[in-house]
Image (cartoon, rainbow, N blue to C red; front, side):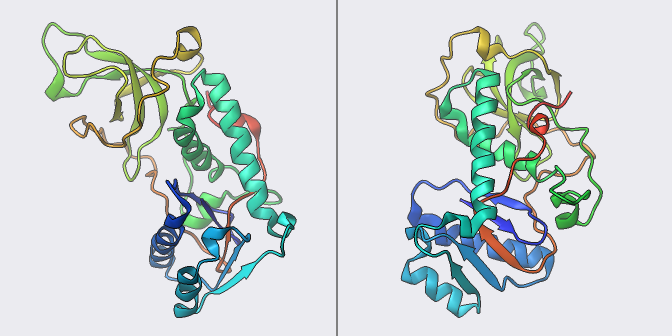
Amino acid sequence: MTFIDDCTRFCYVYLLKSKDEALNYFKAYKVEAENQLERKIKHLRSDRGGEYFSSDFDNFCVEHGIVHERTPPYSPQSNGIAERKNRTLTELVNAMLGTAGLSKEWWSEVILTACHVLNRVPTKNREITPFEEWEKRRLNLSYLHTWGCLAKVNVPINKKRKLDPKTVDCVFLGYAFHSVGYRFLIIKSKVPDVHVSTIMESRDATFFENEFPMKLTPNNTSHESIIPHQHENFTLIEHNEESHLHTPEEDDNIVTCKSKRQRVAKSFGYYE
């Protein structure tokens, strides 16, 4: 589920297991956005999906004075910003998975990364990015890397052994949640306490932007479950670029549920 600020086009993506989670995620979005911006959400525009039509959803909007606008039946064009965003994200997911050689089971990692990058690309008729308008601070893109590329990640200090390798081979999966680290899928490890097919977070890594190891080897990890932060003992190395938090921005306080149009195709996961 995506929420898009109508003024800045800054987008949040939430991963739902079922549609009945929509209201809880909207509540979380509302609290975070209003707290960060010190502004109130006044209008919510959505399609006629069942997740937005429940009595609980309506009651919540009424309770907080939010005008809930719905598109007419069978007219997705009435919510064009959201529909274009969904199409853009879908196209990026397909392109990035194909380039990296990973299977579709990893779509959740891809879509979060695509949204992260889209928020940092200028929108139509604007030179300033959604991130800069939302965060009210300058943007630094030096930390971005090619999604799915090979990365040599340093073994955390508490896992190192004198005679063991100091790095493990990983695939770059995206940016850590509420942290300044990166997310990696371990594909080759000779360190006893660092296991293949698990996800680790670290900032201390060397990226090989033009190498995609999963295109050259059979994909044995496609059916692994993605459990964020399962291996918390890995060290996150701090850095001074902007944090990768999903944070809200300025506005005319209209939020659209879903999407926007594709920007610069090369920008998504293909930074050198």
